[in-house]
Length: 352
Ligand code: NAD
Ligand code: TYD
Image 1 (cartoon, rainbow, N blue to C red):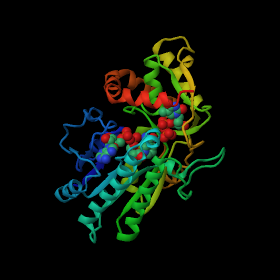
Image 2 (image 1 turned 60 degrees about the horizontal axis):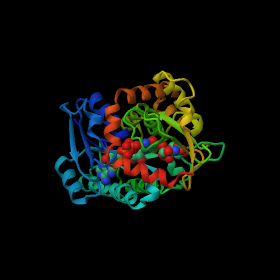
Image 3 (image 1 turned 45 degrees about the vertical axis):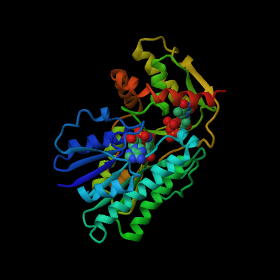
């Protein structure tokens, strides 16, 4: 029986990873450590919280004393590290909290892991979950491979790049067994409505403007979150130490085409005349330093570990829309309170 620590398990991707591990590895014990920031929500895990191989620990990864005490108490065999500040727009207005959580928090976890296992690394693993945004922006052609040089452009991606480097450095310096994966944009159930897809679903449901930054021609490579969780499971159990795996679905969309598709699917679902939701599209001032294009070359994880996405984008979007429609209480809960203030400040600032 292994003790597996998952950080950020109450967030969007983390909650799917926790579910994947709790349900599929009943002989391992899964500890979900999360500070429950605005992005963390235990309701994401209500279906697994009573299972005997699951424990929630409320803790902030930047609290060094607490983290060291927890590692000494539980002696985790492995860490899957997802806790992070994750929204680019927030990193532009508040870079320090990204440095604190994403850089300092990661180093505190690495150090705590090293403190309990240094010299006794057999069977141990630190798995750092990162993003394709560390590679910067592509032009109209080409893909990010595992050897693409890092060139982060936003405070978010710079903080993730820095944390990736620290993980590698702990491997080189202290012999810590580690693996890193860099994934493209995720979407799916439990996605916090500050990000493009859930924000548009929320706004369509509430008949509000759909803000498109700049000319809407920016390209992202979208992956259904449950396919990411399955890839993480595979990398954790079968990936090689000191390796990086890029994860993506070869699924590039311009923001404007994506939002138009979403509008069509939502109109069908809501029984509205096609074109109703599209009329909510509103072009707004661009994000500063906006990366033009992300696209992952996912051939390594495909050929070495046999992973590939299980759903097409249309299937995933329909599943996502259905989930949000069936869970409107969830959406209302996360958008009441502090979200209102965030939304006002973010979208007042950028109105054209
Ligand atoms: P999220 O913002 O939905 O969730 C982050 C979670 O971390 C929340 O539960 C939050 O409470 C917790 N957290 C934040 N600060 C913390 C702290 N100081 N201590 C403990 N917990 C803290 O993020 P997400 O979209 O689920 O992303 C998870 C990870 O995956 C991140 O590391 C992110 O960089 C990476 N990633 C995300 C995407 C994406 O498209 N969302 C793509 C690739 C990689
Ligand atoms: P986002 O979901 O924030 O993810 P990321 O910036 O990490 O890729 O944004 C996805 C794309 O959508 C990105 O090009 C920015 C754009 N975008 C908008 O056009 N309008 C919005 O309101 C948001 C949140 C994002």
